[in-house]
Length: 338
Picture 1 (tube, helix red, strand yellow):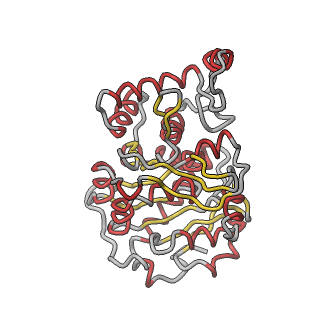
Picture 2 (cartoon, rainbow, N blue to C red):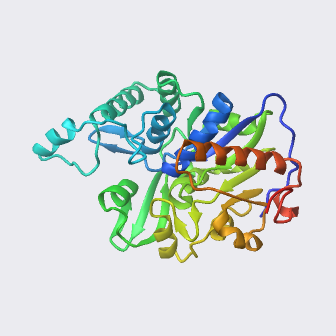
Picture 3 (cartoon, rainbow, N blue to C red):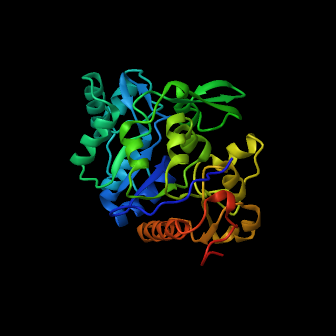
C-alpha cells in the first residue's frame, strides 16, 4: 500500500519531523538541528528503555540530548564526554550488576528522570524540562509516554534489548523481533501535533537501524497512521553504504533475518510509508531497484560539516518532493536527482 494523498504547501514557517534512534539518528539530528533549530521535532525511539538499578534509563533519548547539547562522548557516540566511573567501580566492588555502564555525570540524568516520573510527570514533560536545562533548540519527543519494549528472540532465548545489545554484545543469532506493549501504546499529543501541523514541510527517517531503532516507533499504530496521513513528503536515509552498516549490528541482523544487506532492502522495508529515499554514491547502481524518487549523495557523516551537508540535502530533497505526486504515481527519480 502506498501513500496517496496530495502534498500540501506548509502554511507559515516550515517545520520538520525526524524519526531517530541510536548514533546514526543522533548524527543526522545534529545536522538538522544546526539548520532548523526549534523548527525541528525529533521523535525518538524508546523501545530500548528499561529499568536498571531502580532507575528509568532512556538510552536513545539521552544520546540525542547529549549530542545536541555538545556533551556526548565523541569517541563512543553515546554517554557524556570526560566521564568518570567511580560509581561503577564502587558498584562492582559490592558485587552489583556492572554490565550496563552508568557514568558519574550521566547518573544524574537517570536519577532526575526517575524522580520526576515517580512524581507523576510524563516522559515527554521530563524531556521538555531537560531540553531547556541543556539549551537544546529542537523539540525532543518520546515516541510514546506508554512503555513499548523491544524484545529480541534469539537462538539463546528471548532477550530484552539491552541484554542483547549491551550484555551479550549482539552475539546471539536473531530469529525475530517483538515490541511488547505496542498494541496498547499511543503516540503522544506532542508527536501528533508535530505531524499534523499546517507548517509541516517534511518527515525524515534518519539513518538509524530500521529494525531496532525505527520499527519500535512505527509499531505504534496511531503514530504510523499519523505519518501516513501527514500532508508533507516522507523520506528515509539509508543506514547501509556499500552493503555494510556504518555502525552497529544492522548488517548482521539483516543477514540473520534473511534480508539482503543493501540500501534497496532498506527502501523496501519502508515501502508504502515513504515518498523518497536517500542513498550513498557507492550505491547509485541500486536506483532501478527502488520504487520511489531517489537522491544519491554522500551519506557518511564523519564530522559536523558532513552532518550539516546531509541534512541540507535532505531538506532540499523534501522540498523537491513536495512539488510532485505521492509515492504510488512517482517515477524513481526526482528533478536534479541521479
